[in-house]
Image 1: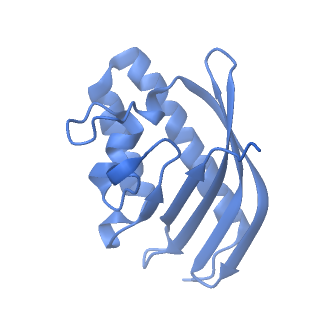
Image 2: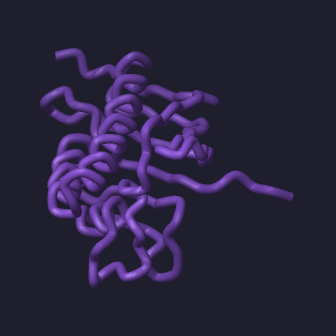
Amino acid sequence: MNSSITDGEIEKAREAWGSALIKISIAFENQGIEVARELASDAIDSMYGYANGPVLFKPTMASGAQTFRPTKDGALAYFVGHSDAYPLDGGFGIKGWREVVSETSESFIDRNIAMWMGWVSFTDKNGSVTKVDKSWGYKKDSDGTLRIVLHHSSLPYAP
């Protein structure tokens, strides 16, 4: 197995993340929170590195003592809300997303570790667009799967 990450693998990982977010939103609208939660849980398991240790996850709309989400439970609450343990989470993944597009600023690859930074634009079912600054760090696991081990997201600075 070639352990070096490629730019193509990073692009595929970003596309998979965006597709999963859209599926979670549509499932919530059509089938409710339990189906959306199951899809989000599966997406986290398949894309993030929580099974291998903490993930450095700083969501866009998280604050206070729950700003950072080093556990799967924290990530799941952020994506679908409806969690007594994370009462401020409204569920970013259930906001009616229909399109997710990323624009690369720069990436860095060192064998089985890669970093990506750029913008991600989210379009909802009403056509409203939210654009965020995003950084992802990836590590290729022993099975050759890219796992997100760093996820930082913030709204652009407005002077």
